[in-house]
Length: 118
Image (cartoon, rainbow, N blue to C red; front, top):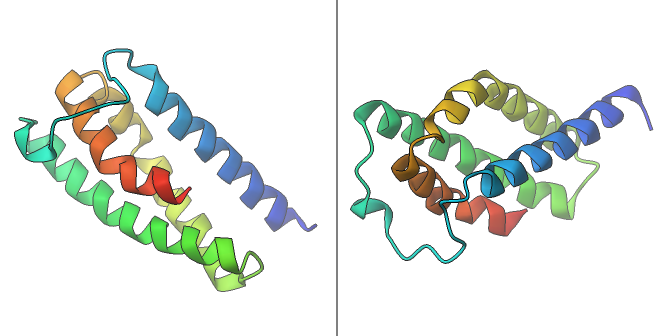
């Protein structure tokens, strides 16, 4: 295994831990969320963040699907690294927004599709 592969696996492991921590960090959120995203009132800044995040998530879901069937696909693996680097840039902002219960629920519902793919 080369250095690139080690870094990629390490990042995916960290991403998994980050997503797992995000999913469990807010004890106010239950696993059986019944609300829909439309019912939640988040700020315009949070909405803009989520629009950006959901576009990123759509791209990430596609690379996850490819990774499952073709883990040696170099172009896809490069895309995973690029998407991961993009995600690092807004992790602090996401962490701050997660302190808002309404945003955290919105995020959890929106992220459910990606969680199902992983």
